[in-house]
Length: 261
Image 1 (spheres, rainbow, N blue to C red):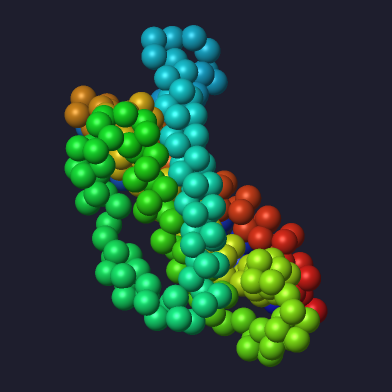
Image 2 (cartoon, rainbow, N blue to C red):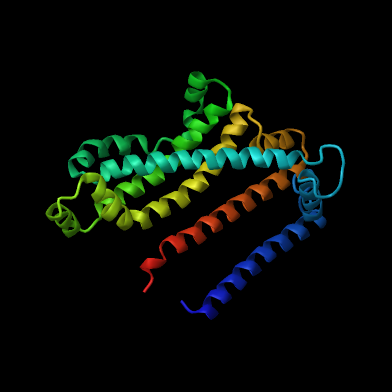
């Protein structure tokens, strides 16, 4: 894809975003929807600045910044744990066809379970504390990494395994030197998906378990009919997701630059 086409796509995506914001501005200012439910973009932006302590001092100023730190920290911690255990378990399963045959049915049984459905069970085991939410975030985000790692190792060229046997490489050496580089594109794709899931589960966990974070802030704003604060939290979640995905995509391009011709 040439640079001109990439620039055209970026310009088009920016145009779609601006069109949606313009539609939002018209609908709220023209009174198509009550401002109790749909605040104006100006009010949302003002609430966002105040919540992030960017508009001077005031009552409640800076609270949103603390909630953001809590949610981002929970998301990153859960994602790192999910990535670590997902890669380790996925490599152990994917490198052995016999292990895959034994474990695959169990994985397919557990994989569709939504992480939010496990929150009541996690609450009964861990109680209402940050560790409980972290466990659920890590559990929900682990599956894309685990399955992608299994697929990546299972798809390694069989001749590489023959070469490893001829060189009398240990299982650990084969995984590190041959299996992991070949599985890296699948692993990174799984990690990008896991990061999005980690953010979603973190927010849901904060809402259900009453833990400090953007999820709790959005829920409290909805109950109090503070529409501008509610939309400010939603916009902030979108920005977090966009920035985190862009950073991971950049890291993926750097790590996989050896694949480009």
